Length: 359
Image (cartoon, rainbow, N blue to C red; front, side, top):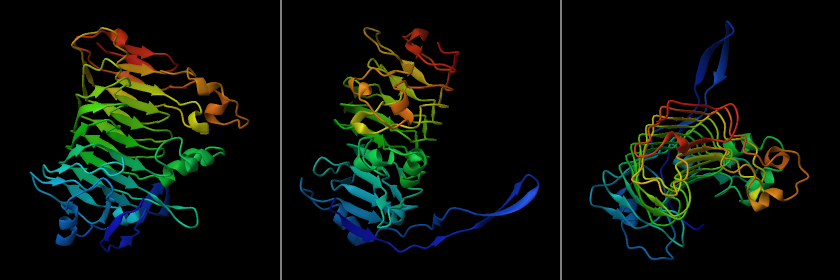
């Protein structure tokens, strides 16, 4: 992807932490953290506010961006690698609407180095924006079928590699997503520590509203309103993603499905290693205006091998190549409310899940 790049210098530092482990004092190095980014200069703001054409490349920034109510940024934005660590985009009510060549409105991505390691953005914060289109967060690839993801999946340790390569600790707050067709928020393979809170999902999508892709983990979806029309998919897909919290959200009439947990079974030749386990789905409201043909509000184990590509042979005895079952286990689904609905909309098709107090 061709981009314009605007950088700001920053220093990274590594602190020593003292930890008590089994009564012994251990000195461990804390992960490198980026110091606060410099504000974007006036020239960058002018570039972002300039006219956009369908063929115009995104603007890549490595500075704190502060906008104002009433502004509209029609140019796509890219945040790449460690240069984007610690960046804050505070729209203060402004709109990001830029898309070029079908790409995302805002892309947060890792960059592969010459030695095969990954340059990863950490601690990006996006707040108070209207997002017309979508945000993508990418590590090894844009989805579970990307070639580098597929190649990594063919050997042990894939989950750890995918997570090490992906952006982490991205914080999204007080956003209004106006879906137009693409998935409004896509957390690609390996994304960890993402938080999306106090936000609204509106408009329409041909897919889901949020997709947590394979090998992602420890993400939080908290206090959001999902008033979005999905054409045929569930609102939130938890696809081989583990240890996530989906709490205190409101889903308006999710007739095509609310939250589905499953593990894709080899689509695109990629082996999915991690199962959708130890997720917490609690305190959510699924509000129904009618129940005609409603799919489950929560479905643990929504696929269990029922896809044509699940029967494709694989000689590698790992993850989904060993079994096409979802293994959506050890999850907790409690305290959810279904006004206009029924507890039967909470469907548990796997084992060792805690499901209760949903009505």
